[in-house]
Image (cartoon, rainbow, N blue to C red; front, side):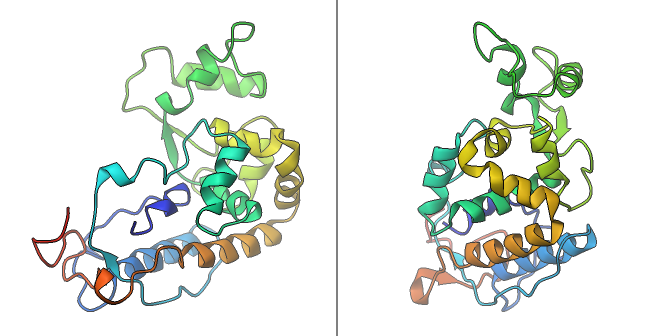
Length: 236
């Protein structure tokens, strides 16, 4: 796994700035680019630890079980993150990256139309917010439609994600559960009230995440082209 677990934080797009890797590990380039973009969006600035090599195996079958799903509850989130040495506070801080980005409708429409027999709409959703989501994602909506994960400040990296959760505006079940579950609610409230605390916890969690699955020796390589293996004999 070459840090696919970082998906809950960011989805990297490899473009012309990082395609030619030279002798710099791709993972480092990706995370460095993300850190730079993060500060440009108002987030914290931090030094990225260097030296991650790229993996030699890339299979879609390895994704299942390594990424959190939109309908996860707190126990499932903690179980997944703890496998990689990340505590609940780390998970909640990394989830704060949902202050930017978007989601396709199919990741949350169960909360709008089929939550339960007694309540088609998830009662933890703010009614006005739920109405807005229904307008943006009607039944059988265009699969290309996307909705901001943070309805209040979708292009700024800030702690508004947590205030959204407190007001019932968490888009995904796995977002809103961080506030509705008593075991994690106090951390959400703390990050909502203190942006500096969130930034500090986020940077600490990102550093821990950057140490997950580090490749050493012959278990990894420094790619010449970030989008492909150096050798055609490795397992794609």
